[in-house]
Image (cartoon, rainbow, N blue to C red; front, side, top):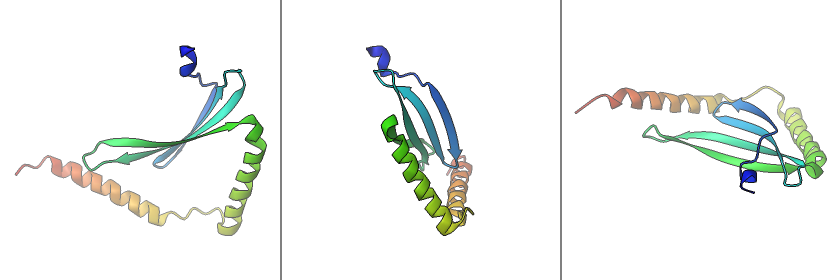
Length: 114
């Protein structure tokens, strides 16, 4: 039974998207049927340079695949219809660059002594 605690990944895909990473993992149930876990992992850096990952996970079972797929398609189609497929991320990118610059500034001043 302890062997099932560490469930083996049967199939796995990774999508890196900036500070976020998405993991799509197929796993087996106790009855040896398959289900999907989708995990979003986002890296947060603290002022002291240490970091942590915040994770969100959903479990999707075969009986929900069709409905989930339909709702996902409707939602993504709506977004593309309303806003087009051009990515508008200038504001996010500026914030992200500020954070990177702040981290660089912190690193460069860490070597100074009073």
